[in-house]
Amino acid sequence: MSGTYPTSPGFTSVGFTSREYNLSSTSLSGRIQVRSLGSQRFEFTASYPPMARSDFLPVLAFIASQRGMAETFTIVLPDISENSGTASGSIVANGAGAIGDTSIAVDGITGILKAGSVFKFAGHSKVYMVVADRDGVGTLNFIPALTAAVADNQALVYDNVPFTVRLANDVQEFAVNTNLHYSYEVDLIEAI
Image (cartoon, rainbow, N blue to C red; front, side, top):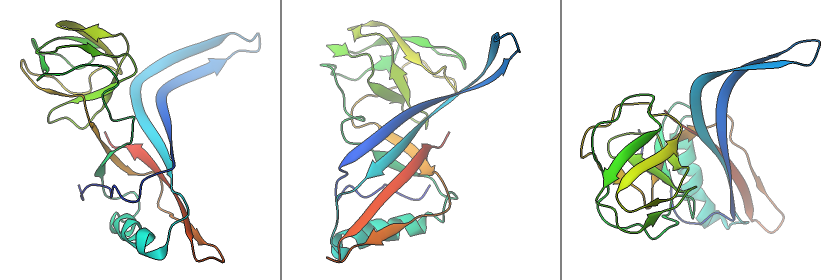
């Protein structure tokens, strides 16, 4: 892991994708069979406004230090990483969770953890998405299935959730216009 993505300058927009991995086949009659491979990851495209050289160079230096897709780093995405409900407190797992589980009992929560919010378990790199509002103590339902076991009393990170990512490819491009403003867009994939 090689650091945390620079927070300044800020993005003008972030495209968010949840990619599921399935195998499918279609017969000549049009019947489709689908088999899930049981894997999922989040992907992002982040765009910047036109920037002065002094604003762009720290971003460029960080990107260059990643050596294409070779390194992983963390990024807190504006709005997406933030708690969208009223949840507060030190939320922890109330019992262990096994690989493949899509729900876990939680306690220590006050308020609502809203469906569509993201979270991760402390010490894990995978981020999960809440699929049903969790109002107070009870069962938290999420996608995808756990990729690693969760211990009893393991904490949840549910606000300013850092995604562990890598560059989506080994080629990075930017443009400079006649006003000497730099244009840049970065594609990231979750590193699991």
